[in-house]
Image (cartoon, rainbow, N blue to C red; front, top):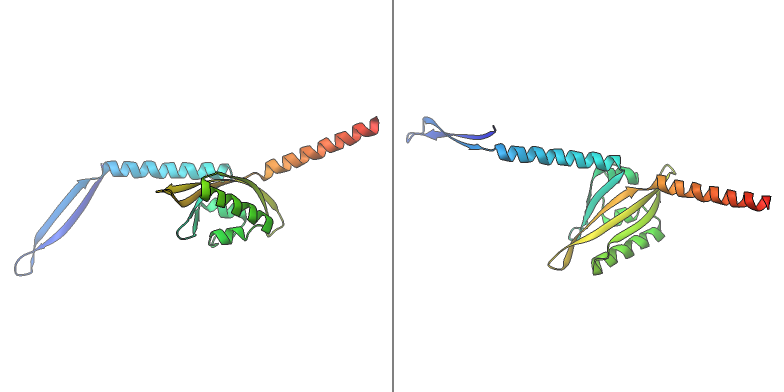
Length: 178
């Protein structure tokens, strides 16, 4: 049982303390909802981390990006990195920047969902691959936010490369035997 309690002093006409008046309100339902929300957020954050999935949105009015901390970690940026459309695009090669710009433009123009596979080379030389998905959120027909997710697919890309290498090796071996 949760209670919000407010107590205020009451002054007499001469300015001395005459007593106190209190108000109480049952806030048990609010506390239960807050607890459930906190548990949901924690579960979502744990699931995102386990899946190497970053999520965020671009506010069209301010140009600012708000993302979960995993986005910055996956991209290999410092925790104090200020994500904006321009600062995030600058993390990628020019050709990749153009792919992202075109996809964003299409989404904002006609609602076509974003679905891209892109790669980034981190400062330490490691190459990471990402699957980007996104969609525009509109109010009264105007896009106000671009909401998206970023999945680290580096392991998948390595497996695809290894499979292609194995196929090429086997094709060469078969050619030599013939």
